Image (cartoon, rainbow, N blue to C red; front, side, top):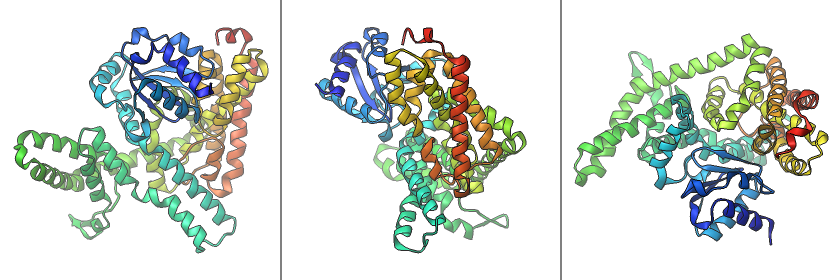
Length: 457
């Protein structure tokens, strides 16, 4: 029996059987399941399955399996249960459309503060875009390294790479508008249309109160405001318009009202918010320096645990749009590096073979910027190593902040981020990565791990 087939059968058994699975989805590292009856699920049994790196109880039951294997297991579960497996990348953070009202009720039960709900909503806008952003950013970064290495930027191969890498970022605002409108219950196409209004080059030909309008003012924040507004307007107009003329009247009035509101209200407000965010972060990094790096990197992993870190995507994009690069991403990337260092320390110190096996599976992807297997399979269940990993990350973040390392695009962290930092900063970034590895290892080896912690792993 193949490994993924065996793993799928064991998971189904602990979930309460094929009849207890209502919906099924997968993301980069997690198998997401919606049980029919949660009382039939054996959580401890799932956690004890060889190959399961951890379990998260959130909107859905999320079983951490790791990249690559999760897709294969999801397909096996789908075949055994007859359920269609959906991808988080193709929908929202909660891909189970028929269970929206249940999800909302569950969120309210799980200490969902307004701020957490807001971040989740922002995250659900950008999560479907992550594969394209990562791929485009990595290609753009590699192209930048090639050009800086002496290649002719006007040569056809380099131009093709440049087109492929930067193409998405030129039209990202449209995708954000589409996803925002969908998230707020509106028509996705109208969200895209609202976004185009704010980025249309013809804005520069229009003068308001003697000043020309600025295309792209407010960036993605302005786009999200406009797309959320058009969804709000569309839903209210639809309630008043007879069904016979809805297809003509509702979208027309929604776009017209939103267009005027976007240019005179939403874009200026978006610009103000954008300025506050970018200036605030840059001021914190510049004034705080090492201290700012310590705090930002040291507190990032708890945000990853909740899944709310995806809500920072528009912040990264706004920094790039406003100042041309992103000094925040290299700092936060040290969170994963601290995890890697801590995991190495545990691996060399523990005698628990199962724990060693989990670490061996999580370390390669952890070094490539995907830290969830190590977080949920190793450091978080052990407790104290999670804190020492945060401390190691903090030291690495202080290093990145001190040398003002910045990226030209966004993508996964870890070693692959080397292609996205400024070419003259590559060695410094790698050195900072090693610093985080080293201190994550040192803190965990010195006082973060004792063998008795691994007894229940």
